[in-house]
Image 1 (cartoon, rainbow, N blue to C red):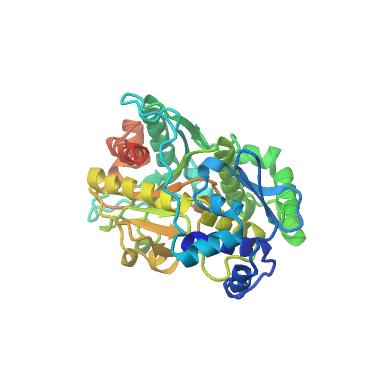
Image 2 (image 1 turned 45 degrees about the vertical axis):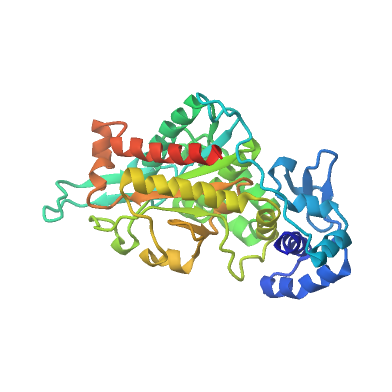
Length: 417
């Protein structure tokens, strides 16, 4: 029954135009769609079987899903409703066999040949000033009792970039084609620093966001008039940078997107000292809570998850990667009780360390996604290998090499099935 209900629920999402109580509205509409025996005309298949999804009244597709990325849903869309329903009643309505994950080579030497993998090195700060602007640095204070010999800094954006570059090299040696959403220190997804973006692109990006409905007129004018880089960065640019990363991933038509992050202990807020806590976890799409479907974009992204196999593939890939985080790094997989955001904003998938979370970069890429949070930077056993002082001594810390290896092993096993 699930294979029938999901496409129909997706159709209900296409037609939904209200802003409040989205889940209740869908529950009311679904029985009507089931028994009417037809679907709204918001889907179009071309001769190759590719699915185009249209917003109500729109002549331009909201997004397209290639035939190869669809699960059984596309098959059921093309058949009459009565055929699906009668087979279900007879007990002969069966899901299609799962597709092979690896669309590329089976070569032992190049097992990832033909595979496109997008890597997003989280954040963009590469120095103290930029990392402070985006609030992604750990400022450890000298404390002999804590074992911190001097004041030092950890910059997450620098760690993610080093890890991404290591992983890219390792994947390419196995035949993969790899995209980095950013490839230099202090560079954003726009291929330039925030300072350069401020001078060259700020106005046109704000105008574009308004034209696409991401900003109200009041918000647009406030941002354009503001001379505060901190305000514009935190209130607008950080989210727009994430959208640009997703746009790159989608244009690349990735088979898998890897979002690289490093975590901190939320109970150690201030992050001027070390913590004894350390966990690893991965996020995947989902955890759509009531009130989250007010905007058209949110509804279409949920629709995409339902008519494709991106969610189960994300969980599979994340589970394998998290397994190697634990094995190679020796860091335990988090449970829902290990952090407030895991119990309040996430849904446990049933796979150790893997949680659904409705983040921009689990939601916006149109492919399976693994959003890795490898370890706690402020952990008392981890921090010394991750500081700016350590990076000046060893540009490629062994610990980051291990992180890249853990990602690699999980990815290779995922595509070997």
